[in-house]
Image (tube, rainbow, N blue to C red; front, side, top):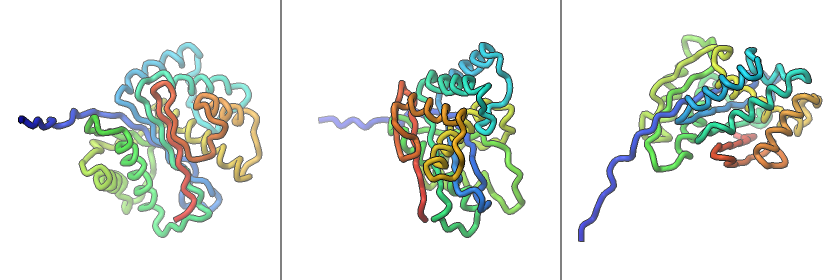
Length: 242
């Protein structure tokens, strides 16, 4: 009897975009969130986004904070485009800082980013050896902040390989995928803020919350959930304790 051993798993390269909402060290921001959108077919998403912008004649930066009655349809259309790209995943972690104890905000931020990236890679399954290049919104950091190094080390501990090939920081106005991350993350964080009574309801922003809930086929998005819709995966995790 001959035993066959499977060969090494095929390498798959992912492009990932990460953004945040709130400021981790600012007491006024009770809700802090990190979001990551990634795909092995980012070129498909880019093509659809370009077509959408040209059709809509909308070339401004998408930002959740800018949602208003006069532009809400553009933001709903942007969400539609996310669901057209195959094998896209969006994952976010929402932190309720009221119950968090953080001693070093810089290291905590880098650790949170690394854990989000590592967990997303591990959740993609065992069919491929996934490697990811991260594009992050540009940050002004001190000399003591080892952003790239600490994130790569955290992801390596989780995945047991050097799964982050590179981390590039860019200004969000130049990258629509980072803007998507901003909108999706902002929408979800806003739903949590409404649930906790932290903000007054805004009609246009609530329309986007309800639109995303409809796309995901769920009654609320201010909760832990994991959904797959038309090949697109969404995962929301809330952390409200140490």
